[in-house]
Image (cartoon, rainbow, N blue to C red; front, side):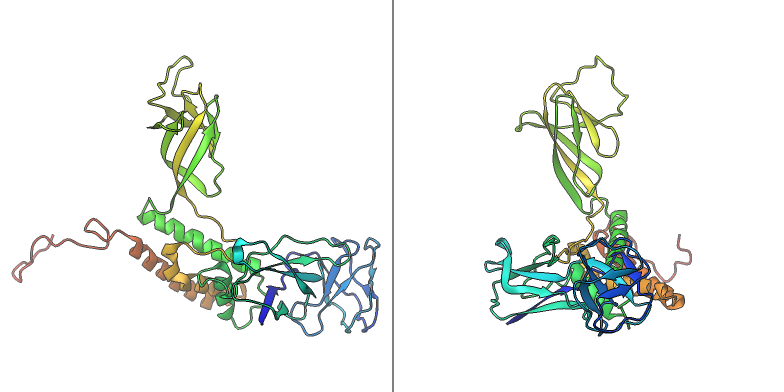
Length: 379
């Protein structure tokens, strides 16, 4: 037996309105401020996620308009005036399984399409046929129009990696007395903001930190474009015209050569025409450039995305960074600033541990002569 769960976060960034009147249970009409952003046959969430009487209902086939909307079925609970209404679009969660792990293709589980449980923070499905080798995915679905979202990341019985985005987010929430007012997207922004700061600090003490490589084709005009997502700037540039012989290219300015200037293929040159476009000389034949470049780091987007190896001993920095920002957002500025100062001190520890460990590094002083007790002046 295995309980499969998805986070009920459809309300985040969803169009929103509020009830203008209290509504009794059993009504199929909701009086609201306006339905801007809502569409026909959409699922709407009445109430905030996790509240006991929050429910999901479906709008009718008419385009929502005016100060009231008609539902396809009666509500189950009463709702006071000013209750929020979110246009979440989807009213079901479809759970999928791959019986050969993440290398397989996930297929919907029999009876694994369940109603979106907005009165809880998660929608849960009790999968009684689960095996330890299974892997799972899920997606949201609209039961009327059958529209669906894309599939989620893989989930495995062992759970998420300790260094994953999911775990960092959950640990940050666990540091807070009440995290219900914080959306996952806000927390993810803080995590990536913290990661960006740590990458920049790492580069300050080690310019070769997190280098990347890319092979980029160029045509007979010599033009090529680097499309690698985390490309920052080049460090080394090699060129081949036949796929076998590689030659180091010399950087030049785009206006540094004459129109009739001849360039040997064994000593190529390249110039940059913007942030990611380059031109190679000679350019009579197409070829490939192999570029070693500085990376600014990829953004952690999926729950399964994992921190870079050097940062994994400093997960407490990310967790406390979340808490410090949450305190400040909650107007507890003194506590937030104090904790952020601690975070910055821990970041300096991270920088020191990345510094070279030999005698040329900034963390070691080489004493070349013993100082005696008679020495009065030290230069």
